[in-house]
Amino acid sequence: MKTQTLTTLSALVLGATIASSAWADEGQAEVGPAKAAKESTHFTDYLDRDTVLGGKFSTWVELASDYVFRGESETNDGKIPSIKAAITWTHSSGIYLGYYGANNLFPGDDAEGNNPHINAVWGPYVGYATNDIAGTGINYNGMFFQYVYPGDRDSNYLEMFNYIDKQFGRLNLKLEYSPTITDWFGVEDLQSHNVAIHPSWLLPYGFTISGGVGYQFFDNSGPSLDANGDGKEDIDWVHWNVGLSRNVYGFNVDVRYHDTDIKKGEHDFYGFDSNHQIVDDRVMIAVSKSF
Image (cartoon, rainbow, N blue to C red; front, side, top):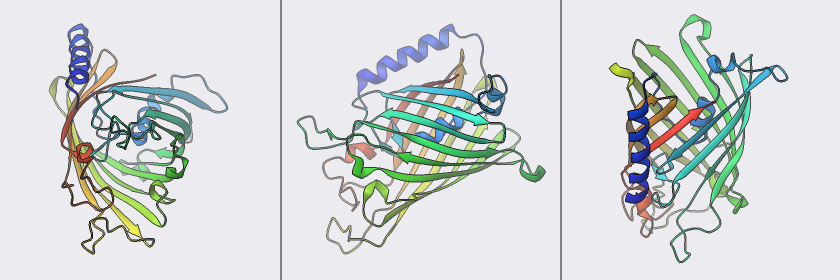
């Protein structure tokens, strides 16, 4: 993470904290498109907006010191700040659809060590959310998201996010299973699966502590991905995060630690000899708002 970026965002957060006089409870452990969809489809927000074709629009924006998705920095170790936005139309039935966009900066071979072909990700999504299934207090949110990399269309793929959660007093327990529907990053016959648990706990004074532990694993019936020559395709990884958040004058402020179990030179798919920095442990700051 770049110190200058972190310092700038820290000043922004501190200024907002000093100026704030109203606080609300809400912590977020998810990142990326799934988080954007959740942020912009709250049914309480839905009821306050004008109806369009039986549904209502909401938007979500976030500025952060990094873009971390399942333990990986999507901005090449925070070389640039992360900017994300989403607009969602939600029907009263729980069906929603929208469009998401964010900047990216993947490692590569140019003079600055970046990939010049991947500098953004965007895409449409469609999903369904429902609360208190059969009076059990269990909620469900499922979404298809199409990743589109405008500078590298061969890397596009489709993923389905699935979440169930239940509130237990101050504790919310959320489970995730998210498989890819098409080849992951366009790699022939390679399908990704992510399973994770995302707990969050409401603390006094409006704070929320939340986190997640996930396992990203793959099915591969295509060409060998034995990059280090040891005869194994060790391309799976574990990722985790923990953070503290609080609503500050209408903005959700989140400070979060991320890490993975990926060791340098021991991960076949990426190699990580020259770009291991994107899976190093890191602390990031994010400020987001829903409209």
